[in-house]
Length: 484
Image (cartoon, rainbow, N blue to C red; front, top):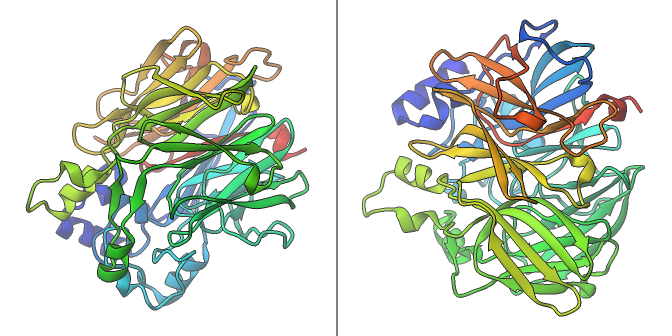
């Protein structure tokens, strides 16, 4: 298995299966990890990160997004740390495990070859649940970037409990980026289909039941990646990056097309509103991978996010581009910090750039989600070769200042959640944690930073017993929430 994947990677020269991206094949538990410095004793909970970890040699051209989902977690308690990692055992993962080989062509492959298994939500791709992870109602939920099943995961053992149907009340799929209002103990989600002109939206209550579900009509099929919430509203997106349906059907390939002639549209509806209650606000064309936060301020809703003004990768390609050229172009995300104001009284939109640095994969103090906040913790892109995070930028959006922590030469980080200090009363009173992998020697660690001074040296470096491949999204779960 390991040799098959590595042989494929070397023969194809695919950088997203080599070095810091190379998959690992051991699932382990390691306790009492070695620490450089000292883990603060007021850190109590679990840091979990999702990401791609290809198990079998791929079929066709491998795209980084294709890899099987694997969770890596470090549990902190009383100044000690325990590391675990486990594959997410999705339906498609188990099918391939039984077959002993890959069964799906990936994002850069030929979809028409994916006829041996049922397509996922009309999408001819393997549902890997490899994209994001959140915590609600006592369990982790791992999801996929094209709308798939949400897989329930035990937050301590990382055991896959199965596809979550919320007590039999879920009659849809879900985008990976669900939004959990910790104060209301409610989770918002959305769903779409590549062949249907709607966005579905729902709310799961604190007992794990879909309390509200509706569909919002849009002009045609869309592929939104994220959403935002306030205390009383949810914000859905109709963005002008569209998959060419004719090419997908006739040629069996995915081709995203950026329609600069169309506006970006933001649909705001009450948290428990029907689809026909949505109000649309127009803005300049762009694509948004990830929001940070949104909140209500008088007649306005303010939303902070990262926008990509030029999201169509084929624009950068020269004639004769290789598969690797196409992959690198697809992953060159040149996003920046941006703010929108949506005036519920006048229907007007105001937008402006907050910073010109290339940053993305933002997180914030999750206790403030949907309420006014001013701090965001974004990953800084190293775009010289491949998509890697070479630093962490802490933004203060009130005074538009920033602090930067550079991971160091040859060292690349992961999406970095905020960890509130026990008894914290201020938004940034706590820590920021990140998996960091050294590409030069293959060693990984978790760095713990003082959230008030992220530009300083780490308070602690927790050394890990195996390499953590570079990956996608992460979350922090307070111990009190796990054992409530």
